[in-house]
Image (tube, rainbow, N blue to C red; front, side, top):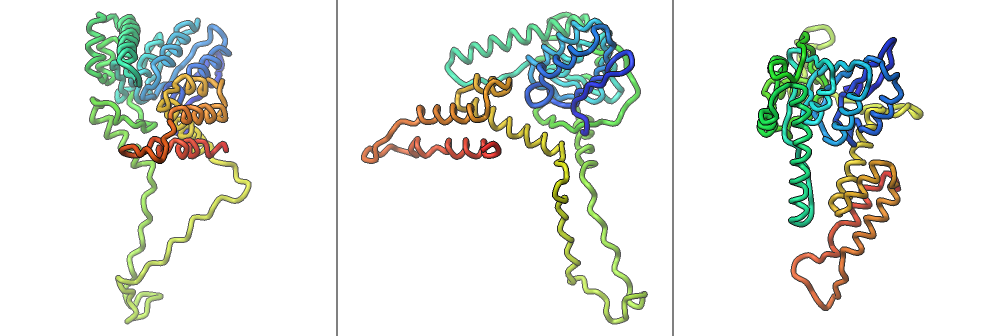
Length: 335
């Protein structure tokens, strides 16, 4: 997956490619809307979509921005449009799927940590989010809301023909090679052919091992008779990989992967510490890494009561929790 997100202006329009997750770890609504707003109001847009989904709120924001755009929007589902990405696809005036592409709709999901009231509030929020999504799918397909809700509950995958019949696509195109191998293990009903295509993509990305030449026969040129190499002879060691020369530009793909992993670690740590609002501020750029680290360390200090040595407690002491180590490891890249 070389191009995960791009917006290219063309004569008379623009082409947008989303080949990544929707949301903080991939294509955020904030960045997308900023670039979309720079286009002429009536510019035709071709949106090339290949995504496993992600944040429903970012997807809704991207969907609404595309619907507000005055020019025609054509969505091309190049591989998969699953979960939240399928809702982005519904913004297209025309939705085109190659024969081997897939679209999936399912119920929204979320994580919550807190009291029973917090759990009930999350359940109510998920119900409201589903209602909004159902309305969008129903409006595009012309099907009853009850039918769409049932399909979402079942986690329904549509190939191009199924999507066309369901009103979730408007045209079928020639099949294309599956690209961008996403982790689809999170989905319980992924079609076997999609799983196989992703596995094949992973295999194609691995360079085959070099084959050793067959040993020469005695008497052949360069191999004197009686000196046949033994099967136990150690092969010549593989030369060590030469490091890139000093001054070589860093690989942007590696940089992006490391940045995403680091951001995920920071966000997960904020959530585990009961500081989800801090994670939101960090994603929006309103909180620096130093602020996040200081806040988490302060929360750690408040959460760990002092326990006198002459009052031993059963089990491991709260002071032995590796909070400090985890925070230190998480922020080591930024000192």
